[in-house]
Amino acid sequence: MAQIVAVTACPTGIAHTFMAAESLRRAAAQAGHTLHVETQGSVGTEGTLTSAQIAQADLVILATDVAVDESRFAGKTIVRAGTQDAIRDPGALLARAGSAGVPAAAPQAGPLHVVGITACPTGIAHTFMAAEGLEGGARKLGYTAKIETQGSVGAGNTLTPDDIARADLVVIAADTNVDLSRFTGKRVYVTGTKPAIKDGAAVITAAQAQATVHGVTAAGGADGSSPDYVAQAAAAKAAKNAGTPAFYKHLMTGVSHMLPFVVAGGLLIALAFAIGSFQFGDQGIFIYEDRYAGTLGNTLFKIGANGAFGLFVPVLAGYIAFSIADRPGLAPGMIGGFLAGLTGSGFLGGIIAGFLAGYLVLWLTRSIKLPRTLEGLKPTLILPLLGTLGVGLLMMLVVGKPVAAALIGLTAWLQGLGNTSAALLGALLGGMMAFDMGGPINKAAYTFSTGLLGAKVYGPIAATMAAGMTPPLALFLATLVFKNRFTKDEVEAGKAAGVLGISFITEGAIPFAARDPLRVIPSLMAGSAVAGAISMAAGCLLRAPHGGIFVLFIPNAVTNLPMYVAAIVAGTVVSTLMLGILKKPLGADGLPLNAARTPVAAD
Image (tube, rainbow, N blue to C red; front, side):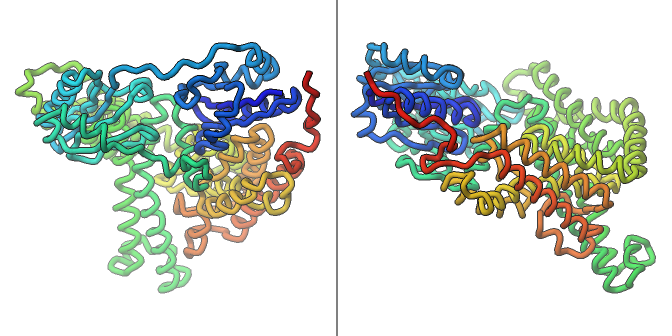
């Protein structure tokens, strides 16, 4: 009988990570081995291997598809494989481990690889001078370096995931806020541009002594303690979106910046109707008419409808362009989005305007070459002028009218749906919301429904919110009703999932789905489809695209509130019952009761 330790990890840190660990556990139990597995997943490190476990181990199995730190296994026999090998034939992998006799090599000594980012408010002189200072300082110390410049014309010398993975040290020399999410788990040192310009070598030397590991709290402590469940859900969402196409990422950048405008506008409009109904009775539903000008309700309606809703399409388009072309794309994108409103092409035109502006400005940025002394003219004069001219002409002369006609047709079709057709659409949107819970399919349904608010179509967003609340609520209820189907950690996590569910944060269900996707995801999709179908068939309308249960207490925010609550409850119950049917009872060791447990006697 061998003492074995193992580490499993995959790029997304979700399904394959846990499936490989489970396969190894079962194979080791059948072979009579003692196995400790550490999973490096999207929700943090679980089952962290202790120094004592490693010291006692006869073998180390690394079933990983990404690079992991091997320094703690120096001197141990290591067998390296992919997660697919562990999932498909763990017995063969254990046999390989048993025959392996090559000790792991100690970590190679050599020069540090430094990566960094430089940025200044104007994004011109200091940004590039600081980068040169850091690169020169690294060469002086005998190190290698790659520095990304976040300048006025966008990011230059962009760091790739491989660059970051190989980095021993991250140096941020910036006078503006820099997103550090890419560097979670890396040693990061933050300073300004001036120290890097003055003495890059001194900055790197200081970084070696003072850098701290970024983001360890959210991922779980080094002692193996469990991370906060909300952080788990957020990390799982990030991992789920990590491999998505650039098109989707650009669209989601626009949507995420647009949402506050839509939420604020929708709630203000709902409050306007509530106040109007209180003041003028049944006539309050006409609070938007000029005869009520000057009243509080009419004023709130104008702020919401003309102010917030008037801006959401330009913001959507502007930040799509910003995601593609950085700051130079923002003005042409927003102007293109505004023109989408003028032409009547709405959110569909805004999306097209954002991509047109982004890629046009990106092409101009790369095509126009100026002496370094004149580079400052590009972001302040040349790119805004040419980008706005190009996207403006395209929107006014080519895109606007055809897209406006398509939007009018779509709106008329949605408003004319019968009960059966509406139920089918609601079921489709509901199933999409639960399919990947925060991923591209979920966001496609949500973006479609949110965009229709500008066309005063409120049914689809009601269905998507009901369907999006259902998955985490069902998991909360299932961990109470069917406790024997879940581990102790999952039962505790169910409480947090319930809070996320009432807040319309569908991602609260991801950690459960990651551990048992074949049973959990179909169960959640069924309940969400039921919730969406009932909501649409009952004619429920929602004027605010977020807020979960808290929006329901605002008068007139939801039309046909009793049936809307019934839709959420029905979807939750359906998913809960399916979870109870499909998931198998677990034993004290956390394995299904019908799983093989009897160890095979060692020879």
